[in-house]
Length: 105
Image (cartoon, rainbow, N blue to C red):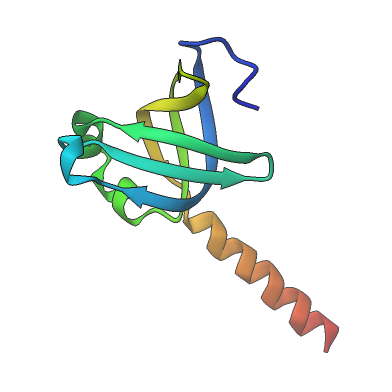
């Protein structure tokens, strides 16, 4: 779905964290790959944003990232401006499953 907004548009994406990369040559930049029901989103977290949202970037399993679309050479990234950890919502899925199992007995 990220192919629809124009370059530079502000967007919000959410998804499960598939990959976290912090290459030694990237000077503090972190690359995230999120997946939702529509596909994957490539996220770039610059050092300043990483310092601000460190806990979410490192530990989050489900993240919401707000930022700007950047397109270069056919590749689309979201440049992170805000990172929110929504991992607590995954625990609610387990609660729903536990209720369904208990009800089925």
